[in-house]
Image (cartoon, rainbow, N blue to C red; front, top):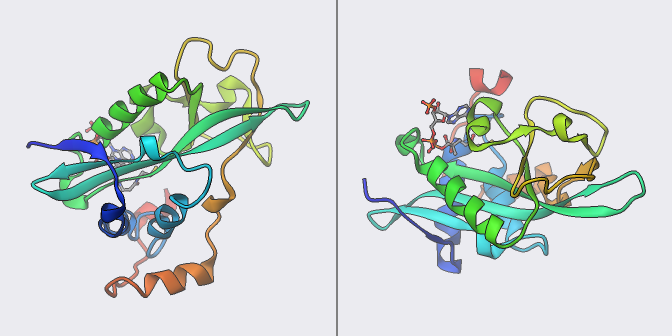
Length: 202
Ligand SMILES: CC(C)(COP(=O)(O)OP(=O)(O)OC[C@H]1O[C@@H](n2cnc3c(N)ncnc32)[C@H](O)[C@@H]1OP(=O)(O)O)[C@@H](O)C(=O)NCCC(=O)NCCS
């Protein structure tokens, strides 16, 4: 399989949104919202175009990873910049073939070279620990509400990058998706039936 990884450009936007919809559909809720998130993320100031990559197979986009700037606010209210990736999507028929891992490895290296301190994400522990993500709790980082849970993870991009940095994590408000906006956006896509599935309760 000859997968190429390259930066996303404007002409890829619709294809990437459709891919994201296919990848996330019915996984975390009936239907999904991540395709709208991708659509909105590219327009906010926290979006990092240099880390927005697609995986291409035979001229077809089969994977995407997108990053935004986020922050950790310490007890003195001083903010420290970190980055967050997501959504990350791979076409369902091509999952578990290393495409997601290749997108993460490629962009992680670039993020290191760009001097970012750390990547903070919410995701499946079983998948992300292989890349070096550890629980946010082990770094003294909580959600904005002061919570910690398994899916909340951090990876430093160089040794001791987060030394002396603890506090609350804030991602861009764009991650909050309005239900009505989603319903309107969904009309642009071919109809797809929503289902309740086992994966929504994990
Ligand atoms: C998650 C995703 C991007 C991974 O990409 P991928 O190309 O399928 O993954 P890779 O081939 O690099 O890695 C495959 C490994 O990851 C595991 N894996 C993939 N998705 C996983 C998930 N959601 N939870 C746990 N493990 C997962 C596979 O079981 C496999 O494990 P193994 O190597 O021990 O057999 C892709 O499966 C996807 O698009 N999923 C739907 C959307 C989604 O959930 N995105 C992530 C939100 S946090």
